[in-house]
Image (cartoon, rainbow, N blue to C red; front, side):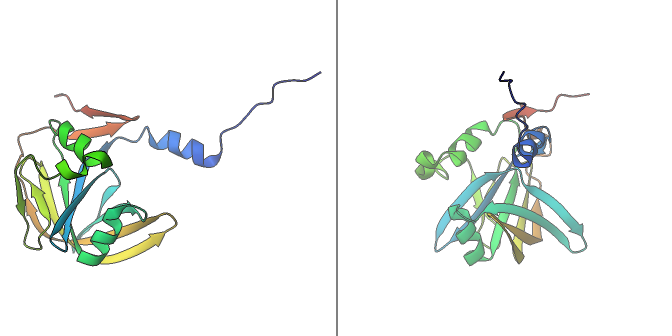
Length: 169
């Protein structure tokens, strides 16, 4: 007699499922290398320390942004507002790569990374260290400039494969 075997998820599958429950702010990571701007959407952004002010950003080494950040030595973390879903769509879709900086308002930080005028906050960073970890690189960025263009807006949050905005309490 054959019975249905209980199939347990692998640790990696269980990890991915668990991480879907960790709400995260949505960020647009930008840089400029050889006169070309680049950008990608990321939720793997974390504060490391306040002295010196440092952020970390995790980037897949197969992504074009990996090489751009590594070679330029700088990046900007644009924390996105809830209204930024169009930016998320453009920067998440490689087919729309040519549209990425065609809409919205942009200005360059002191190092040349594009800053989104509609961001809640933008952190300009100089690459202080790169840590390789399997498929990804962890870029430690020393914050050199902070701009607060949209302190009145609500943040865009990613949770369980969807984008959400916080409601007022």
